[in-house]
Image (cartoon, rainbow over all chains, first blue to last red; front, side):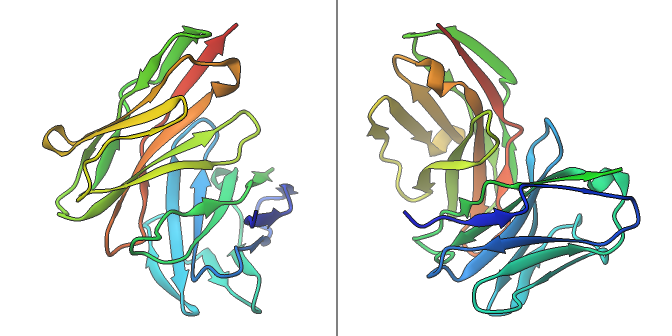
Length: 115
Length: 114
């Protein structure tokens, strides 16, 4: 069964460093998403991406964050200068569309720890 | 504004008991989608069900059933004859028809004891 894959599963970085989280969405999906879950809290929407551009973003997704689809398969989230409060599980997701086939399938997550 | 409320923070049951997880939502949209996701201890988010706002038919899938009541803005999830493997955090989520911003509830941690 096709699945969303994320690498790495766990990343530790020093405060102020740049990190790139990588995702390979399901191949026939058109919409891509990043969500964040601070430990023990709810899952929060960060950004959605369609047709090579951001379609929606939340207030969390500030200038420190950027997303890119550098080739036909990868979808990345970059955090430019990490802060301690960026420590969280980051989930990538993809969906076929936003109409009837609208469920998002999530990857297994990347746990980011900023020290 | 959209909001999903899962008032039950934690539920603990003994194996074989039935358990219902509550979800209440708020939205101004007339067309929207509701979801349930399971997050087992391993951390991934597993899709369980999607319900369209214009389809109030309840659904049963094995031991799982969902009760969607538009009149009370609720989308409750029942597990019948619970098993230890059902132990997880369960999230209810809401998404407008024409928007990609899916809002999650705070989650309900279900513990099923043997």
